[in-house]
View 1 (cartoon, rainbow, N blue to C red):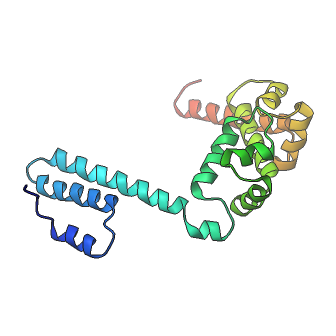
View 2 (view 1 turned 30 degrees about the vertical axis):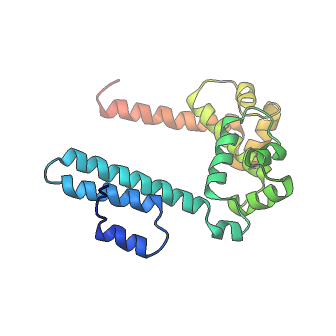
View 3 (view 1 turned 180 degrees about the vertical axis):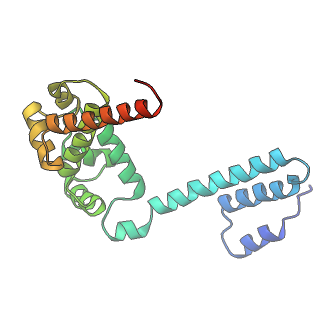
Length: 198
């Protein structure tokens, strides 16, 4: 049975110990690209793109499982991404710290501590800040009444929205919205005048 000779690079990786599948896959893809670069540039580019994707996945996995994050007691990169995505998708619903911890399958005590180390604030403060951010977005991009904005962002009512908004932004939602809309209107009018429209 014939087996293809291994390249010097493959031999070196093997010699360095523990040939792993990723390294061999990258070697094969890059060798294919090297052979094809003069005859079939599209195939060479495809091999390089595939090698790059494999390497990117490995880098992200390594960063996510970084012992430095764990040693500091914080959340890993993938955990931060997962919890941020969970919060953003469920802003209009009640979210308890227990729910957030459950998403990562962590105890509430460990989750609170790790969250604070990773985000620099408590889970509750983060949740309120994300709700206020979403409320600002809705106030600028829609004509929803403030009571509807409050409901869409998971606040108990309009008064709760106003209280938290003032705490985080330093102005009431109504005055903040009015000021931003006035600025947008002025900018639109300026653009129209510059373009010769009335």
